[in-house]
Length: 239
Image (cartoon, rainbow, N blue to C red; front, side):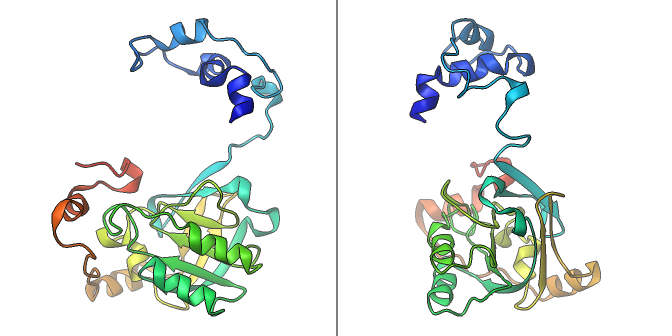
């Protein structure tokens, strides 16, 4: 971040991207092109020309499928090439603490796909960061053989096939809510797919008997937030 600042900062990034931007009003009262016209790109190796980009794709990818009808997010720059496509067994947990206990007790093994649900904007409430489970998986040397998917979120330090922001979330009736232990989860980052190997009829059958877990917080502001917050794909903002 310091290198970026010394190279000209965000105004210089805007300058580099001028051909792809609209000249709209910013919060400081200036229009985008006014900011760009006053910007200077100091270091061409940090803020590179578009034809000399570090990578053809960005660090973040959005995946879709029957498990993420409205999308899920992965930091693809933190996933090794050998595990960009992953098929694993679901190990399902309704809270972060449950998943952490299983991971720390060595109950997660190669080929598992840890599913942590009811941690989304509404279910959390507040879309908790799943840094502890992902860090534990890395620490146990499993980041190349175990995946993790959640309707919660991740920090920038996440490593391995960890997909968050799954929308719709479990508490809103997303398909992540009816996954069971042993279900087959397919992650295909290059083709932007996230799916559970279940037929539509089986998914519909499971939802007939589904009830969302009880909210952790039932009074006060967080209870109101839980009822009023939008989905992660809509920004997790109050409606």
